[in-house]
Amino acid sequence: MDSLKWTDTLEIALELLENHPELDPRYIRFTDLHAWVLALSNFADDPHRSNEKILEAIQMAWIEEADLD
Picture 1 (cartoon, rainbow, N blue to C red):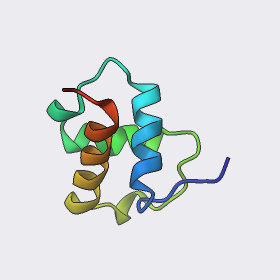
Picture 2 (cartoon, rainbow, N blue to C red):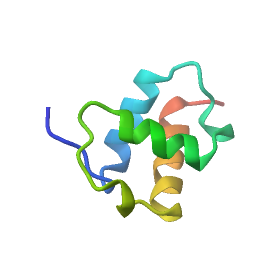
Picture 3 (spheres, rainbow, N blue to C red):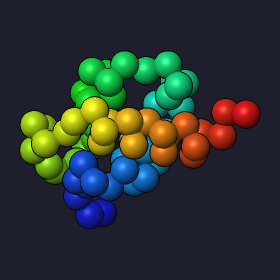
Picture 4 (spheres, rainbow, N blue to C red):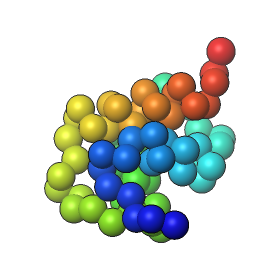
């Protein structure tokens, strides 16, 4: 399994969906999202490289993959 970077938004979203199936990604805080990404076993990027735009992209991909309709 390759290591994930902040730019791997879809792959991160899929990992989060698998690791947190009980969560509704529409109602998460970016501080929590940041922590969950850092906790992924295959995440290997600088924690300080994230920003609101990246976290929002991860959240949007997670929402799309969760199929919450």
